Length: 196
Image (cartoon, rainbow, N blue to C red; front, side, top):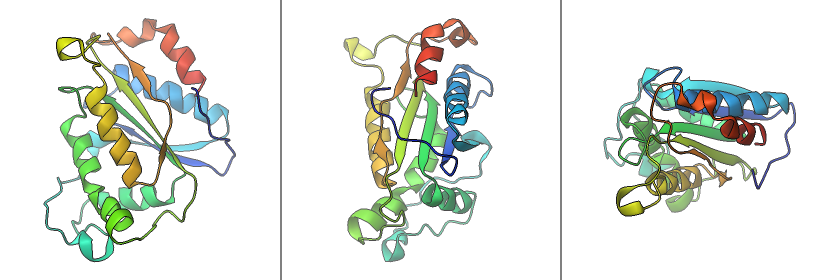
């Protein structure tokens, strides 16, 4: 990874596995990153977005009052963890060049944090230097017309991390891992994950 953050035993990173397939290629890549974080003394907590009860953003605009989402579901707990953590690692397969629906619902609910930071001037994160990392796996090698297959998800994650006051570090992007377990033969990915 080109840019790193100094780790210490007090650092807490929240990780999200956004694939509906437990133990799939994306989760393997995420687990390798988690192992690297643990090796460097970082505490982690992993959530599977498909097992969270997070409704889509309803567009009610009530977050415009105080920057807080009013929908009562698992996002209330996840939101507090996103405020208190030192970093986020978000791992996702590509579904039509972006995040699967349940992971995208979590991202969309962070609109309340964007409102707080950008419109209300509220910094829930205390001005701390925090980081965000995207781990993404694609079955394809390129997108439509030869475009970068990760272009859509990279843009989404850049804005998601910005809403959370996170500095986006270099992503771990893995192409051509369509079949189950294909990533296990990719020692290059394991090496890149260890370097994070």
